[in-house]
Length: 380
Length: 101
Image 1 (cartoon, each protein chain N blue to C red):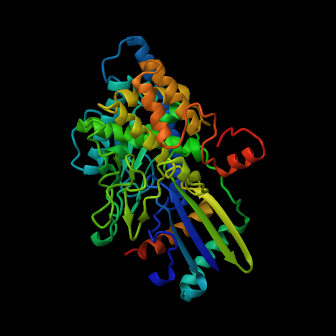
Image 2 (cartoon, each protein chain N blue to C red; image 1 turned 120 degrees about the vertical axis):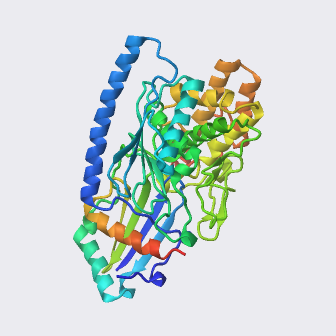
Image 3 (spheres, each protein chain N blue to C red; image 1 turned 90 degrees about the vertical axis):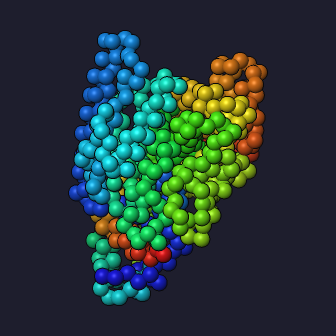
């Protein structure tokens, strides 16, 4: 049965929908497998914790353990194991990129922040590549990373996306969703969700910068460089340096990210625009890191990491992130230190005043309504 | 019958939408899609399907069907889409994807 293109009217960017889990039994298998895997991981986690307690002083990187699977273009997870920790390269670029990228991400968290994997107890890092067909996405499912191959099923001149492991910061981004889940556990909705997304972009970018030896001034601050094929007008998916400028394409449309609270996007799509409004805290981090100077993963990254680990909670909004990063910078580098002033200035550059008391310039609809009714903004 | 499928979210956050009117399809396609809708019990589904614990960067879908004077919308995140609805969404994705380029 043939589809006739003129009958399918694409109203937003005429970019095309992708596949989801292809049928019920697949989904059931995926869910069952996820549950089994989570149980196995929790057992492994307890075992790892017991081992660490026994040895007391684990060697550097002692917790680094990676498994890479292939879904073979299906949707069952985790799929077929193709590489384990210490195993030789497979020769499959997606599998080897997933392995190497998970390793570089582990190394950032361990070497710089002394965090032993996503749970700080050496949880094994599981990645599945070749998920589904024509799957333009990567995600964290609560227990593992999953990567699609982009538009591998289309003729080359119609492809918009390459495989999602091609960009190291995508891998750092997905793994950081795991770190967030085990720490602040920011709700995946509205401002807490946009903060969750921003944390993933921040540490994803830091993995890339550290692997390239780039300081804050020389980094490109692009998220998802290399994901687009040459058919797309764009340098990547997001820009932390200049949100809203990463792509402008006749088919995909224009990068919708704001860089300032005055352009905050109120929407019900995308869990309240979590991939859109993340541009605001992303740009605040960029401002802080470049003002402090040097390697962004050192001072600015440390401030953000400690805030994520110790200071934020599921309902934290941008104001809370600003206030808490300011407080953490004071604790780590001294009250009125240059670092603390950089944090204050960085948030001011995106329209958020440290200590501003939960009154962002552009509150969400619900928060605005509450304010109008005389309530203090609580959540949104 | 008018069918609209919007997708948002995912790592890229790039949203998209596919709409069609089954009256403009050939009889076989029209029958196929209308059967997929009718068999799914779509009009009896809740407007929003809760999806806790699905992780991050999943696609979010919003499916709207207008038929015989009634209209209904269901929102669900990839990973929590009711089994009965999956064949329809897969089919709509195929139709939309082939129109690219």
